Length: 224
Image (cartoon, rainbow, N blue to C red; front, top):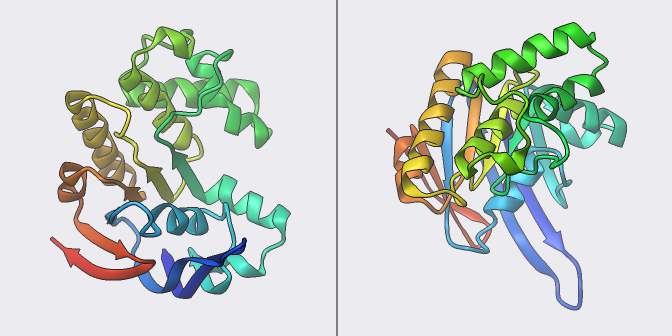
């Protein structure tokens, strides 16, 4: 599902910074993987490259067999839209839209019929146990509920890949466990490939595979 070959990423400035220093990695369909390591190890950079939010300085990235480097900006945008769901630490919900409107937004961008959009959004909010919060605004929700809406939005097109950057980092321990259980359920029920960047050892230990980065390189790859 995800394959990286010789991936390097440099950031140019007064001094060149190497965020990734030659990464080779394969993640199979349906795996739930934790990406761990100290701050500055390259975790978020790697996630952004896999998600097509940035391009590598060197090397190749394939997503579901498709070489991302060969895509135009428009085609890369379509690949992100159709194949990848993103979950961020700070939710990134639009504050003036209700829960159902936030979840519906990616589907409007695909020009789905209004009735089909509403049905899918309702279905997903029910999946994350928020069927009773359809018309609430983000400010009316707890942090855990906002993250559930963000997960529902990420799943709106049932993407084969789900990328999460510190999804429990802004939540209390109990709520973080709930969100993690929800992501595990999504992984098992929908067969999505899940890649989680985390500093939380509990989150990492719950995944079937842990990949450790340091100084832009993979130093350990453990499977359970």
